[in-house]
Structure formats: structure tokens, C-alpha cells
Image (cartoon, rainbow, N blue to C red; front, side):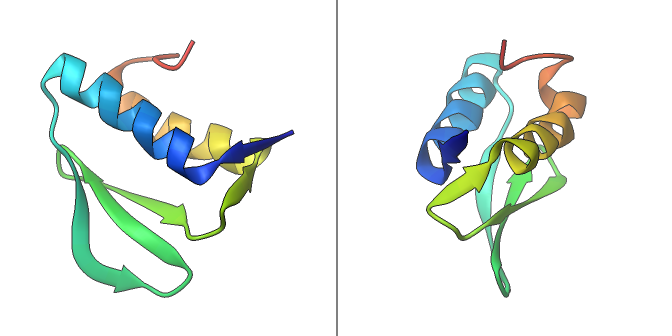
Length: 73
């Protein structure tokens, strides 16, 4: 099952905004990844249009530190 990259970014962004946590795209390039910053935590997100469930879950877990455990459920 694939997740759209844009949908994932939107989901993280909405939750961060709701909790008052800054979520911004960093200016530096990361080759095959876009580098995002969630309240100072670096979140690399692959540039593919669609991401595997495994990748999506890994990115969500990285955000858990700032947004809380199981924030996406």
C-alpha cells in the first residue's frame, strides 16, 4: 500500500500546526530527499511521489518525538 508524499507532508503539517510546533522545509538539499525540520528535529522525506508503507511509518515515528506517540492514528 503506497502513500502519497504530499498527503504525508500535509498530515504532518496539519498536526504540527494544531499543536503549535514549527514544521518547515530546510533550505539545504539532501540529494534524493527533501530535508524538513519539525521543531528542530531533522526529518528527511524521499522525493518520490509515492512512499511505501514502511517508509511512511518510519517518517511518522520520527515525528512522534515532537507530536506524541501514535499521533497519526
